[in-house]
Length: 613
Image 1: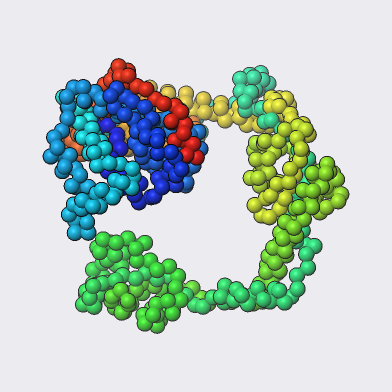
Image 2 (image 1 turned 135 degrees about the vertical axis):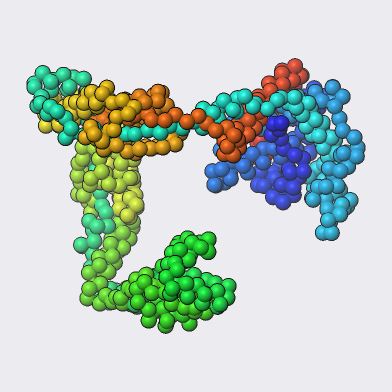
């Protein structure tokens, strides 16, 4: 039975108590004289129920996007309207249950209250004082809270009555499972250019003209945006920055651990519970009963679980000396570790490395110069912005500052020069003619401003300008056509008993393929083609590289009695039944709402929303 998504009263009470002030969206300062937003039949739609449901949906949305969502953002996607509609539907169902006489007894309500952990003391028993205080903290009386529980339980009973008689979708599930579970065994063989009996001739002028006319997209130049820009990057300025030798020496000393690497080992460590277990494992390795990889797998681990990476001798504690005395591939131990006795395998010896100051100095000097250039650029940014604000053109900026003036014919595929920067590509794409220049930061600390001078729309390039590319494209297309024709000819001669290898082909067999299987070097929709074929049938299929031959050897119906397909059928049946039940209940709820007199005080709704801003 499907269950209508609802907001239990206990949940929003816990949320309000823990988060405080309605999780930052509370109603501080909201007048206590407004307690309801409207009515659904004889049932009130309260402010508290709307606030609670809204906060729950906000928390859910924040969990999905991974960041805080403001109420304004929630409103922009209609979350407040969706929540209000949900609350209205719930209250119309509550009203319907009351009119039908569906209700629950006091004992059931009492059980719900007593089982709520929010009202239990540290000993786990119901605390009447805690119960009363908790309700008062959220502005509810005991009567109101218990009434809401009664309504919720009655609504659940009503839902059960509506969807309880929907049968399981067994026939549907078996049909779908039989469709998905059947398999095919096939053979495939590529048709290569070497197998063509007649070479593909070169194109004639009419051939090229026809191909050119039929494929204009292949020879259309993209939109080109002629852009003038003024740019300054740390790399452009670094050569003008002087760095003292003392600064370079100081940076070298700060990073001495990087430039002086001690001898290291690539090591794996396998921990055991006792030394006896470790000794026994080592004996099996020595006797060549198994290797270290098999020993790791026997323990239910992967090599990634035991890999320590590259380590120095001090990283291994008391085991360091023995491990560093071992040769590559050797297993040593047992050695005591803080996790227990262990065997160690040495996978590689990494010799000690030392980079002298003279060797490191050029790179360190360049790094310091770049950092200094970055600081200079950022400090000059305010001055450049002032010049732009004063009406300076890009040409003026190039004359009066370190910015360098250049031009570029920018297209969506441009990646060279300034187009290597994402910020530049975004600005160039968004630029409009006549727009005021803006100074924009680059991710490496540089800056630039640009101007759109003109836009050249996409246009088909003249045939003579693309002749070489046109000839290559024609030949590739002609060869693919010839390969497909050759494949079709071969396929027409293949029977179910033909050994494809005798035809000079290199067949590959693939068994137990389902509709969702993937076969390498086949085109999109290949499995759909396979499942359209009859047993013994052979077809030629076009691919990106040319063509392949495919023969269907065996069709195997789904084994609906197998454990896997039985479980799959159960899942499909449950999903289908749940979907049907939900659709039925949604239709029922919509019908109930349509015939229920609903009144909403939009002024009250706006007032509540204003307090949540």
